[in-house]
Length: 368
Image 1 (cartoon, one colour):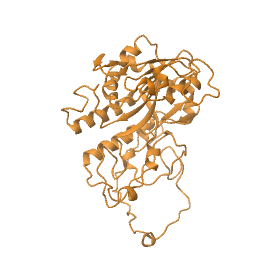
Image 2 (cartoon, rainbow, N blue to C red):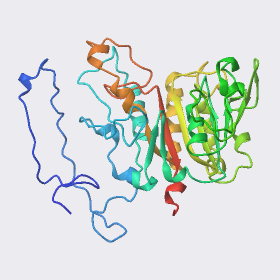
Image 3 (cartoon, rainbow, N blue to C red):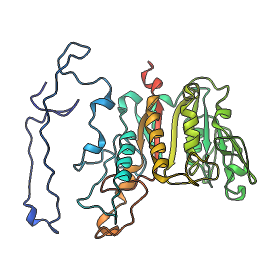
């Protein structure tokens, strides 16, 4: 073991470093680092191998909480898509917002920690990055699986990739988009045929489309039909379903029911979704948020759902880093002029809406 090193990482015993005097930097607004309080020396304990001071076997426990990492970092990936790993998130010296409500930033830090990807690429046999997705390649090749996509809009690139790259049948659900605007929902997209030379929506592996939305209960709201995830997972074998949810706010009730059923969780290979913390939807229950529910209580519940997902699923990555690169606080929010987002990291970007990808932990543990 080196004299000084990163947790599970490289030695810091010798390296080169460059400095510049702060007074020479334009604006003279570079923050001085906060003093670090001396900590009591840790009590060394033997790990399973009998070595004193061994690191925790669980990588989530061995990595410092994201909220404690306040120095700049360099993105590992440059793709304009969701990216694996812990996102590099910029924090400025002074809040960019007119107010900085402690509970909003505390919840934002919890979310950031919950969606920091901890899966090594070698455990997946490689990653594939596309749009709002990070795919763990070794779990995408199983025959006999099904992809369920909730929230289609005009075109659903996720289900097209499931069909055309990973060769699995897909089922598409959306009750809001008018069929005249969405060839997949209208059933007019090429289906079960070659997509060579096709510029629009196309499915080489057959798909089915339904004018149905996802919600916590089956029933009609106005003229729109809602069904539950439990109904669609009923009868599915273990680890047989890839799942995408982008339903503009109904995801929270659906996820809470999902977390209450270990059996349903065990049927899902991968879970990809866009989360919307401040959205209220007609399909939400009263407890989920929106009408009559306190904002802080609503957000605490939703953050708790994100944390509980990690019991059976490992986070692969998010598109937060790409969102972050589009934020220039000095231009957007000079002199703390921006309104405070509903939920955000400390002195940093909103966490109100983003995409996140998960893989079932059982697939990472299985021998291939």
